[in-house]
Length: 68
Length: 464
Image (tube, rainbow over all chains, first blue to last red; front, side):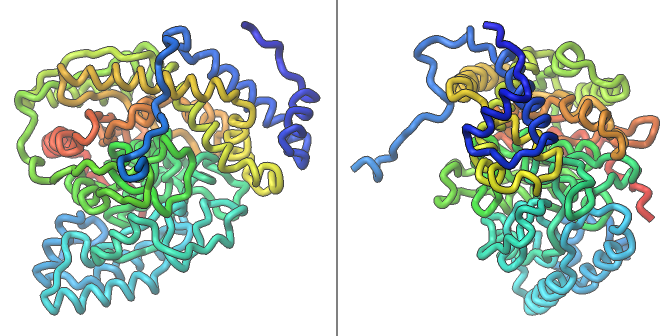
């Protein structure tokens, strides 16, 4: 699914939602670029190769001591 | 007496143990060298000659008494400034942690101090081990001893510069996406990212918990093996620490490569990314040398580099942002521009994408480790290019991503960067030797055989 390109206003609003309200315009430009880079990386993840039962690399596990 | 600046750990240990070299004399020689030349290189963020002399004096008294503790007794070392040393600030090269004084030693610091090492100071890093080289921080970035107009790699930049410049025979670095191996490659020294969990991360400021590794930078492979033998070991206080015992890294060093099977991941640097021709030529010449020494060299294939990098960076930025979110809310202006932008990439990664990256991590890692049923070690590029100019932000940004190190943070495999020559401009070239988990001894054996068969380790940068 192709995502629409983010705007500066949208990224400002997203930042505010997670409490990042002190960002200057320069910071917001950086956040916009960084988010675009992150989205491009997501597109490069070969998730189509995953089966439904493929587990994450780090799963919750208790050792014998803790599980008693 | 040999120029003390260029003593290896092994050579120094022999002289110190035999009482032919005084730890105080050794420390003073390096202190003098650092005072004369580090103003040009900025390898040290916090130089601590008083602590060094106190450590050296203690070592001298003990060795004269016959209580030699081992190869690091009386030997100078430095710590990347994200590693705690009790009583000193751990700044991560950032304004944000300028006053962050460590209450206790990191696990690796404890080991080096217990071994009688001589602590020379805290070494420059990229801000929070991710944002550099930067000129908008409280301290300047480290520069490359081979040409100080050039980048020295990072994020363990001071660790690479200090060992290459003859300021220290050994230094501690950390590696989350390549940060030990990058400065090792660019400064022409040996740098290991050990198996995940082999060296404790306790007391080391995290960048990304599941990808962070503590490693060693030294001028020779033997010294690297000695340092890893010292710092490795299970730590119940590090939840990622492995209980697997590594065994000796030095016992097999001289066994050569005859009969060993080396798999070349050539597609990383010829197809997925096209390395600079000088880098490719250096790696291919090294492979021919290993074949001449009796190794069986053949090509292997793994997932494309872009998939490994996407996996690494999705996990890295997500975990890093979790660490930095509070400061991003409260003090965004106190970051340097590079660290801020690179860390912000984790702000809006969806939970499903992070989980999927970790699911891919498992499948990609399993497939990668399966390759080792047919090979003993793998060889590939570390950086695609020699070090670019430090004052060229476009070149820094371009070359920063041109690397094949991140795959082995994803797999947790041990990976060592070693020099394979120099570019026409006199800058170091390097390759990576990678193994299956806990096969560091075998990696060192291959690297040592190559190092002994070449002369690269004997070259000195023009620091004076």
